[in-house]
Image 1: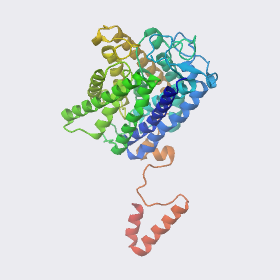
Image 2: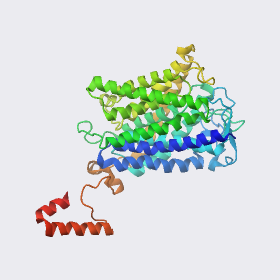
Image 3: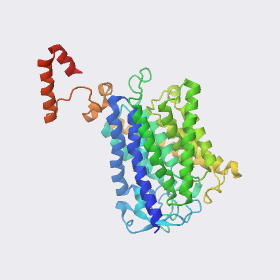
Image 4: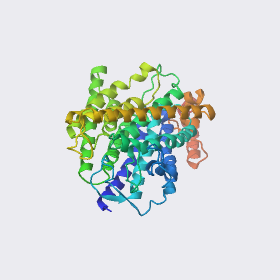
Length: 465
């Protein structure tokens, strides 16, 4: 066991875990004030649900020995049996694997690192259906979706031959097709983006969209969330080297370069199209760059990363308007940022990948590799997109027709926070009610002010405010 690699992957797992609360703030700031708690909870509940399922059977279905021709893992690790006190290597038997250091880390460390990927992938989808989904229906969806969609897709992409067991066979994209995905562009972002599009179709448009303005209620929240995502993404990408070596350093700098370039690309589009660069645009551009570089971060040079980030920033800024043209209400631009950004990063590997950066990778078109890698990247992207979209559509319609997925019109207009959680994110009136001593004290003070200090009408107006 390599202690340095183990420490780095544990820290990376914690960084990726932080991304889910960061995503909650990023999404929470973009919705209206009456929906902020529900939006936060949709991310937070993914931490609970996916963790339980991952321990019970999710890790096994993802990284167990293949039982379906590269489509699904087996039940070797149900309940995480056989995982404690064993090691996994960062140099699997398959030559297509992206790790080259040859060190080993505890199996459980790899388990918890990959768990954080599963959590945030499910949480990402929630932005497409903001303002209109019932909380328990969403919770059920998360449980079913990760089981039927995420675990199989992650097996296809992340499970390499011999990685978690000497004779274990991995997934078809990783070991048969040979497409490259260093940290999850297909399994996480294309997967979540396609699912978000499907759910937006199932649940339909928000009441009043697009006629009524539905502006972000708290842009500082959005920037805070984007900052936490950027910070945590170093664990997401550089941590996927599974070691504290050169490859982690490559992923770290390419992640930084692409994200910075994407911010500039998005803001330039806003300047030329709208006349003003916006804080929301800067935050969205950063996330677009992070998404696009994720599959490529361990295979491209810093110059390649700049190109990928710039292209992603420009294309994602243009893509967010597609929902108005095609009439699907993707509330927080999951499709425009994650699906489009994931496609950009996955496909551009076929152009910018170089074995000069990672000998375990392949050369793309610009480095003498021809079109072979680009074709493999396209097959992987289309396969994941199609599988996720069709299965999510089926799951969403089933939940809608049984227990109901969407809140009532009254609840949506009045505020989903009150309807689903009996809470509100902000209290603009005087402290009162609830039966607590603080509430009773506030009531008494309000009554005193209303009756003896100011005229009655003014007192009522103050209490009402």
